[in-house]
Image (tube, rainbow, N blue to C red; front, side, top):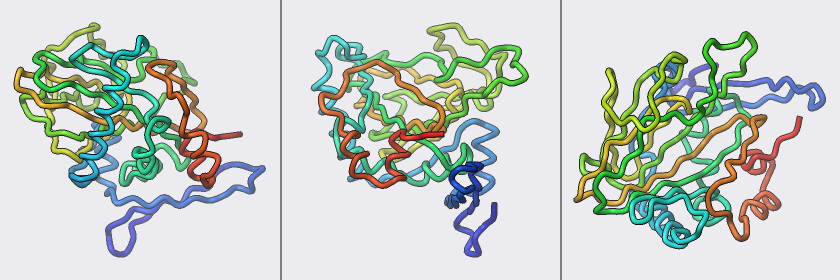
Length: 278
């Protein structure tokens, strides 16, 4: 790992221990500093301001709203009618999301910390405007770590990027994080708990801001107020390529766009879409 001469990039050369492929090398460059990477590993989160311009954030927000409206009445939709909805498999549902396969700097940060081989899942959450009391209780995304940790346990490290498409103020409700909680196997919060916790951090966002979190960082949202605006955000999950998952929830795409995207894409695109072989 080395810094470039201009100080703007951190470059890491990885040797992939694949005998059959001849031990190929991959170089990952990121604009993140070593201090930012250390902060993400230690605290479990890293705030990135203005990673999308307002026009792009607005276009993505409109696409999320269109999908939410089209899926809201489907029986398999993950929604609280009139309040909020989760939308899965966005890469299969609208090509407007396809540029996020190479979204920087989150992609290079994930590759630097997880290894150069990752695949990407993309989902969205939408809270409707003018709905008070809409919130998400304390939770972590991968609740699978036992206590005590077995000697050969494989920690499910993932990096999730929460990309905000609307203003998030006190009206919409802060995002609350517990720094360092991703490495605390002894922290147990009851289901549905929304109370303040010692050391919690409250974050607010402008359209185009993002926060990277370790997938097991405990977080929640503060309940919205009656004058809240839309709360639209994208969740990009960066997952090591050898970890496979299918959530099996939400409205399935009628014609999965990623099939054609993978068919016409290069090797990197196919890897980012989840193609991986030992």
